[in-house]
Image 1 (cartoon, helix red, strand yellow):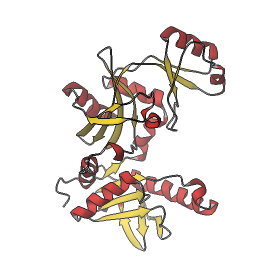
Image 2 (image 1 turned 90 degrees about the vertical axis):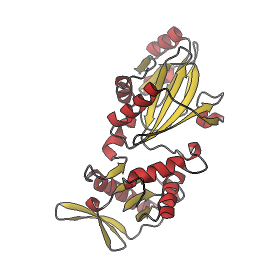
Image 3 (image 1 turned 180 degrees about the vertical axis):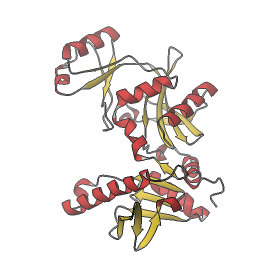
Amino acid sequence: MIVLHGLRTDSPLDDVRRVLADRGTPYVFVDQAACADVAVERTGDELVLVVAGREVRVVDVRGIYLRPYDLGDAVDPAERARLTRLAVHLREWAECAPASVRVVNRPSAGLSNHSKPRQSRVIAAAGFAVPETLLTTDPAAAAAFVAHHGRAIVKSVSGTRSIVRTLGPGDDLSAVRWCPTQLQRFVPGAEHRVHAVGQWLFASRVRTEAVDYRYGGFGLEPADLPDAVAERCRALTAALGLELAGIDLRFGEDGRWYCWEVNTSPAYSCFDTADRAIATALAEHLAGDPTLG
């Protein structure tokens, strides 16, 4: 059995559900929009998921895929608090799963994206180039860094989504004094996104004129990674303890492969093929059996 948690309207999660349904693989979908009869309860020393009175022990499942959302003002404060508690309890339940259960991704492993500076050390250890980086609250230091490199990018240092933008000499950097800010040398080159599902890799080249393609329009084409780069992607995913990863790469004009960061809960659907290759690989990985039997 596979346990899915999140919104049924969330494409990455629902694409996996569709594959499981098409293959006849048993699953339980804990839909945030309809989960009044769902709870995580303690039975002795064990946490048990209870769905409509049915107990689901974590040792009896084969895979768990967690993609809950903060629904914010879409629900009233009391319901929002209940859903937040349920998401926390489900993460605790999933964290208790034995190694034989594929958890996408274990909550403890997913935390790596909450500190990009820390994650960059793992990225470098895997063999990828990492652009020169400055984390500072000193406007003078930030200005000196930008002046030295001529062009830099700025983005969130945490897992909170931000719009990547470029900075140049003369830009006002006074605001960095209010918040630790990460600056990196701008690297010209070809943007790539790699989705790792276990040992499977799905690579796309991203064609865009924008610094942050998510907000500037982009096109995609399949890409073949050099063998050494593919192995680095697998090694990096394993080093971070992930079953599913969205790896942001750039093949620099200097001939080096750079890695910006690793998304631990990637919304992969827009990168997937018409036959749902990524969703199918993820469903098979969760089931731990290529036949999904």
